[in-house]
Length: 114
Image 1 (cartoon, rainbow, N blue to C red):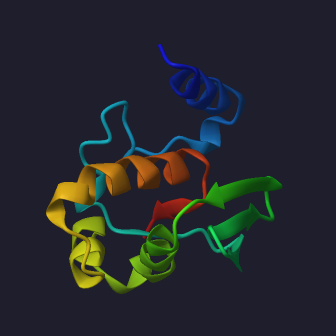
Image 2: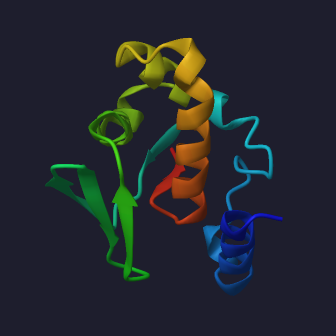
């Protein structure tokens, strides 16, 4: 198991409320899930992307690319992640990377179901 997987696994045990039904080990259903930015999360733009601060659990998350920030900010405007990716011009060959990034944000309670 990678260090990243161990970290995510441990955080889910410590914070069971951060586990989302849409997010499994494979994150296979995230593309078809209706998602939104958690109402208690603020995004602060940065040159590398953004910082996401969760006011409820006081976690700070780095979003490391401006395009993922744009997708996350607009998630609630689309019926699912796949539609949001299409609308933002993200090529299908990159969807797996976005799927993994969004799954990580779900585990961190930054992104939640609509």
